[in-house]
Image 1 (cartoon, rainbow, N blue to C red):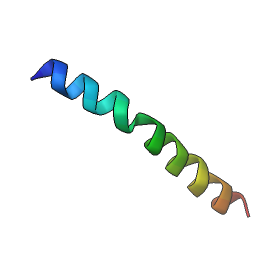
Image 2: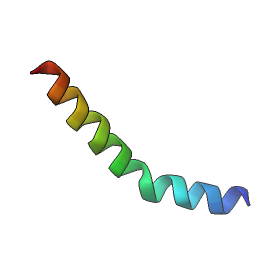
Image 3: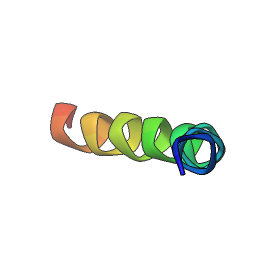
Length: 29
């Protein structure tokens, strides 16, 4: 279960970072 969560987290992590960065850019405007 932990291993599956690790793989899932690392697989979706870049998308989370991209979303946070995108929202941050919008907020900066």
